Image 1 (tube, rainbow, N blue to C red):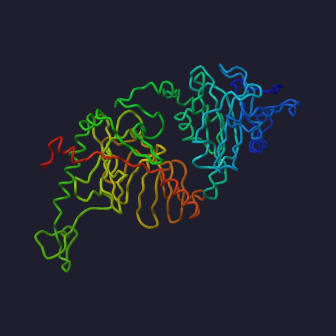
Image 2: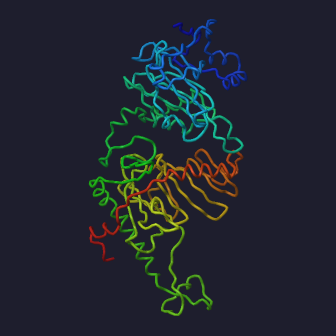
Image 3: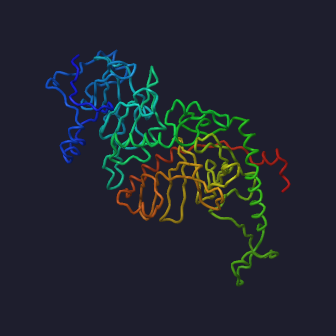
Amino acid sequence: MKRRVVLFVFALCLVAGCGNRNETVTDNEDSSMASADKVVQDDNNDDVGVEEPAEDDNSALGLDTSKIIEEQSFDIKLNGWGDVRFVSCLPDKDKDPLADATFYLMDDEKVIYKMPSVYENDIREWGLFEDISFVAFKDINEDQKDEVIVGELYVTGAGPQGMLPRTEVRIFEDKGDAFEYAKDLSEYINDSMPDDGTIYDVYEKADGLKQNGLDNSSDKASAEDSTAGAGKSQEEGYDRTYLEEKDGVYTYRLSDASIIEKYDELYTTAFSNFIDSYNEVMKWQNQSYRSKEKYTANSLVLKNNEENSVVKTGSYYEMDFGFNLDNVGYTYVDLDCDGTFELIFGILKYDEWVPDNVFERAYALVDGRTVKICEGGSRDTHWLGSDGYIYETGSSGAAYSGTSRLRFDSKKLQVDEDTDWGSQGFIEEEFLGYWERPVHIIGPYSDIDEAARRPESEISDDEWRTLFDEWDARQVGIEWLKMSDYLTKHHLLEF
């Protein structure tokens, strides 16, 4: 098979594509920059075709040669794979609008390898494939092998700016006889990647990891031991070692008795705090008030008045367990996959306001100290997503409500203070809801009012409903441990 003749190659072994979008960008740059971005082919390019493979050779790997993106396919000597052709292929959107691009290695006309799928069955979870912006081959994790780095463009269709392409980076690490999608490294780079990011942004962020003394090698990361003694998922988000799936339904079920016993001891202060708060609330129970008399705020609840109805204190913004410790559940989850488990509390009995798969109170360990990281109720609940993210659903009124997609980072905690309401240590990645209008805020943000006013955040009611259904379907059930069992075991029933 005739090989392509590349007239200009970076020393870094970068090969940048020249698709329609890149041609538009290049036209706006000076000629010296344009020459550095092009891959020039010989005049015989028309003769360099990919012959239709035998069905038993290539169809088994799903390669439709009519889908090959020629300007993003390259001949290269790749590590121990030798002289191969890296092939980028368009998705088959006739089968599914969310179909994703696929990538292969070929030896002459024969497919020898398909790059790992980032999404199950090569169907994206969100965003429509638009184009490939760059392909590069470079060792960025210092494992002495070139990684395959791909920049994929996608559009969300959400809001006025929803049709502007965004860059999504995929990094594939060579493991010898196969490649592995470097999820942690890819998502680290994507977290701060500009919408129109380039390969140079990837190199800069990878270099930043090295300069900060951080390890971006998945080989080394996978060798780290969890201090809790449990296997880690090594994926961004919470540790999904104990996440089980059956018939499409996900349940978090902590089954390691040694972890439970260990953290029952480490979080003794958290359980004591829970009991103290319960006792404080119960002081105000079974009180009544005089509805026809004048009163001040601090004398609203009066003792020894049996003529009027009972007042039960509580709030939409406090853990809503019905003033019954037998209805409290708890478990431990490593919310940021750092090897230390956090303690979360929920309720065992479902009601119309608060389901049994959310946590309303949570604690973390910081330098051996127990710190409350969230406190909520029927208007502020957290739940685990099957995608590894943590979600928070809240409301401050009919016009201001929605769900935030979060990551937890224990390094963001304020060690010298607990959380009376709301949360700390959670980083907001997205928000979907109503903020005077339907909005979908993409990207980390600190001021929701400002972010909701951006034109690109506005979506239609139909778009909101579609995304809401997608997010809602990710809710994970939780098999709670019983607070009452903890109290019995530790002889705390008399309080």
